Amino acid sequence: EPKCCSVLVLKWADRTDSIAFNCSCHYPPRASRMRSPRSFLAAVSGHLAGRQAPAAPGHHSLPVRTLQTLAQREPVRLKKLSAPDTGILELTLERPEVKNAISWELMTRLRGAIHKIEADATAKVVLVASSGPGVFCAGADLKERRHMSSSHVKEYANSLRSTFSYFEALSIPTIAVIEGAALGGENATLGLPETGLAIIPGAGGTQRLPRITGRSRAKELIFTGRRCDATEAVLMGLANYCVPAGEAYGKALELAREMTKKGPLGVRMAKKAIDQGMEVADMRSALAVEGECYEQLLHTQDRLEGLAAFADKREPVYTGE
Image 1 (cartoon, rainbow, N blue to C red):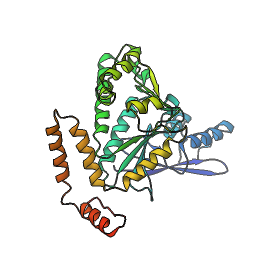
Image 2 (cartoon, rainbow, N blue to C red; image 1 turned 180 degrees about the vertical axis):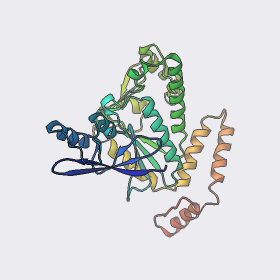
Image 3 (cartoon, rainbow, N blue to C red; image 1 turned 90 degrees about the vertical axis):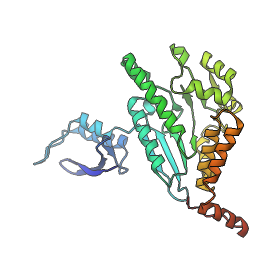
């Protein structure tokens, strides 16, 4: 996306502070890595608490509210890891103050991040995590929803449902790093509590959960709205691993590194074959899906590299071609 770089210059009697910002036509300004939004706001507040910033000739002072708006953290952050973890992306939910409740803005930014991931030919695996300790995602932003009309709630639910479907359809693997609650590890709990609010899981939960746990168990979890811990989640197939508290990210990164060693085209086609094959009516149709995915790999350089590396007893070097 096209961006420009602007610099906010804060002039005081004895010093000048320059804070760089990146801006675009679609998103509000965001602070660069020169200083985090929180520390920047604290620094500005400290100056303003002690004295009034003098207005330099030719410059206009900015009100505190404007500075606070500029310093706000974006609700979704997408980061590409550097070598030796090239190909691994981190998608982080950044609303810890509300337990990453999904607002309209967060959902919009999430869709934008998914679009960037799918358009990135170098992306191999995505880690989805939370910036705040003790919670992964609290579900929909109910405080925001209280002010919505029925038609707006319907529009929100439809948009959220399509966003998760868009996420599910990514061509590369995604790994959720859950430390704490994931609603609507040892200290991780998962659940769909919507019936307690006299509604149903409306972002795909009533369809995805029974496909994972089976119809009977899904009904129990949704009808009661109860939470399950990490151990039970693994037993039901909702999670792949249960690790001690604080070790979820390390385990997720370990898995991601193993995946990035494999042929990226092979991983993409395997994901497509599994996902699409599970949705057809019979085994014959499912095997046809597998055959189509396999055929797309027959004439790739990576397939030849894999065979050559096996014959030479060395590690393959895949290029995604």
